[in-house]
Length: 303
Image (cartoon, rainbow, N blue to C red; front, side, top):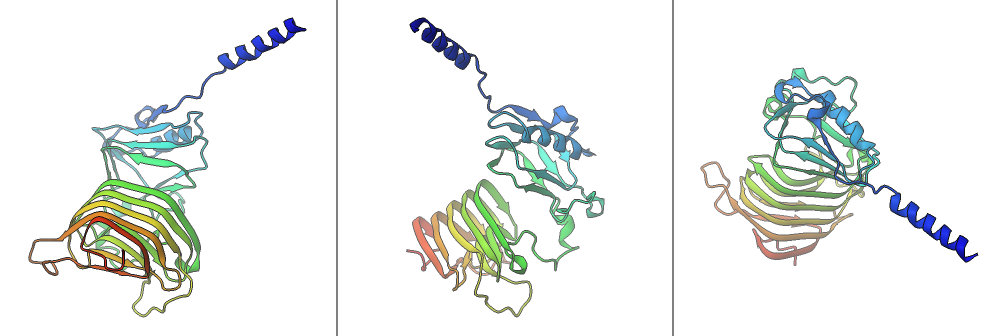
């Protein structure tokens, strides 16, 4: 009997040691899928094909690579989940660019065509790298100066949720908004567990802004429901603001913002003839949270 038990133990150990281990960080370069990267050739299909393989990869944390030294022209596209890996890394070291003319956008029935690049039902996504994502925004500004905001939470009373977002090492250069969370009045759902850190503002008009009162016309009444905003962290954000207030956190009386943290913030006014004054200010209402370390301009509503 002992002999058979010993043979069984040896068989189990042999099976355990011979089982293949799950690899991590397997790389999928878009160039290997036919992307040219000359800035003129449409590389959309190559990105789709690379994503398809990444999404079904057996690697625990595969990497889709956008190599440096190249410019990849992309039409509007959607990267769909739900994916098999525990995490997906989108490594952008080159330049991803949209068509230069809005008339050249090719939607092919894409329901998200109002957005250029969409990640839908993708969990645990990490976007990193030293590259550039150029949406050619300046070509749209004069065409749609009165358009509604895209991507706002809670439009038409919808229930929408966003959580576990980490934004780091970003430079906002003369943008309208920087680290922003915007929700429509009357919406439902939540935005939580969001981190903005290690950010530089170069003349952004609203470097730090939470707007729970968003409305697309002048006369709006406050609603009793709102998208719940909680556990939001702003850290190590510095630079210049083109307008006052440099920090604007406006939350609902009915559904206040909670667990808001500002740590090591320093925003000066832009030094030119067009700014609103020498000293920036900060505004906040219906906010619960803390200010730590150096915070300028100071927020009186946060302890």
